[in-house]
Image 1 (tube, rainbow, N blue to C red):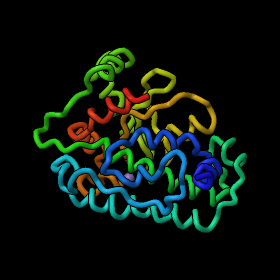
Image 2: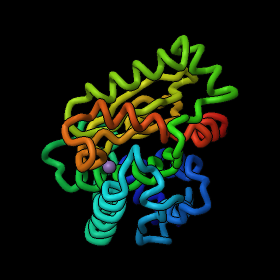
Image 3: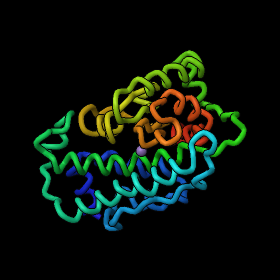
Image 4: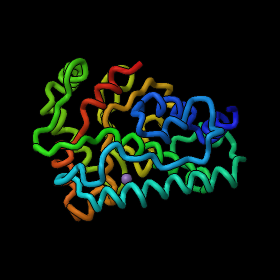
Length: 251
Ligand code: MN
């Protein structure tokens, strides 16, 4: 048990492990259940099964992209976490938790954060996608819809802003809808960082991730090539607002 907590503490993600567990309640995602708040004893990390078929997000996200994204990219993050975990647990807590930016000289720590971030981010991302054959996207409802209207004026205003930020984010990364200190905000992060890292490491903010969009080229290049904006425009059709509402309403 303490082994697991030490592991997350050492890489500055102590907050992330607990939050990730709360966020991913889908029973089909067994791997995240093993990322419990107490025991890292259930290592090694494993690739979670998708809660839908690889072709289920067609025509908006294609089967081949989903297969490669899940079985190659996500699997690689999982493998790397296990490799690093087994070879190096001697990181200095302070070195990591006090750094807003990765220290370029701390290569091992960056590799660990990148890969555990990759594992957690993708595990969340899969649950935030939902098959939808009808090009009739489900929209936020209930309290989440009210909060979006409060903080962004309307869903359309939010959608426009989120699309712009996701499209303009330079290079690899993620775009997020985040409840940060009780206000909905759109944030982007580099590489496999996520809003929890900033929150848990530096700011002591309260943070909930509500929606996530992977804007790495590997998420869209086979189908959309350089047209990230088209990928994003189509992604809205399969964004899972039921799951987002679940996250928003969770304690
Ligand atoms: Mn990805």
